[in-house]
Image 1 (tube, rainbow, N blue to C red):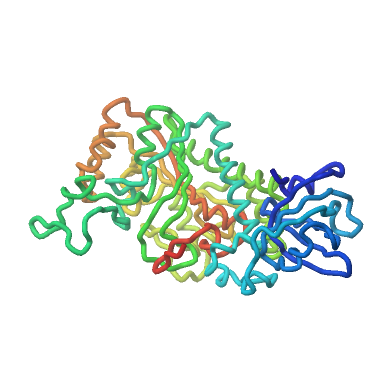
Image 2: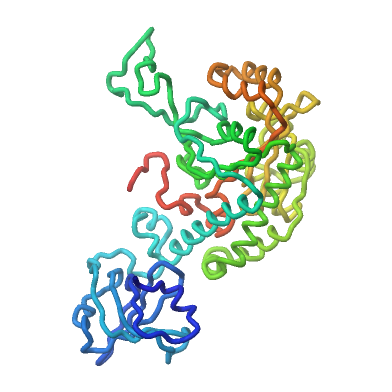
Length: 459
């Protein structure tokens, strides 16, 4: 099997008879030999290949343009040029897959908008190769964080019969004929559908995760979630990934501490383990990136109540597009003011008005607020949202009724409150928003391999 370029560039000594495979970034021909810059996706750097005329495959090489796939056998030797320690002196070469003349990545720089139109090829660019390696590395770090703390991973269902948020912005899953669905009493008869009732793609794994939390103690899920909100902005997608832990016998303060530790752990990981790929974004995307990430990784987060946050915003003297007022949700401009202009560090806002939060959040004794919290960070605003869950049967049932939800849909969720209920808390982190924070990119569509947005379903 071929060696990975990342491993070859880290070699401690020269190596004989190595094989490497990848895609041509550049080719330069001179009299009697050629230079190839080859990348296999394992790292940002290319490896230089010296190909002497007359070796096996040299004639094929002359048609190997940018984007072509090639296989090379040769010796890893110290480079005589500047900028790299190692290069490969080729012994034989094969053109595995030529690239057509209209290969679209022949220029060094392309706009993000253009690359979004060729999402099947954009991972070959330096920027997106680096971004998706970062995505992979952070995914591993997420699992490591929870494994080190004794959490159990749970694969929660993608298809659900209940709405976690109560927003109703969910994709329908059905096998019924959309042109002629069965009808009963003037409505679609879902009793004849696959599940015998309406089914949707989930917006969160939280509710089923709570069942496992009240059995296994510390659990988490990490997977795709869906929302049919018709919001064509740089911060929203129809399909995105969520990290959701849930902890039994944990109150809101415990939840905030876990979330803070989680953010710091991930940023410290990426600063140490992904410095090469991170450096690309610090050089070409956001000059202040490294300073901001280090600040978040080293900071003790500010904690203040929603009421304190609103009072601070109202007395700031700042003119906002959306005027802050108690009982209204905080907007992105409010969140960024708190983190970027007032405190200059991450902020945890907690104890939100109950009327703007979901039914499952624990009601506080004041009768006006719930034990909810959001973590706000510079550049992004909200990156984590969570709460202590309502563990009291009667209070939870009353909240479901108060919000007009169908109590029958939540019979099992209520049943958890009848059999060994305990205080428990959890939160959700949007994985793509984390990647926006880590890379400095400003459009969430550039953090996922194939973005799903209104009117866009390519690939």
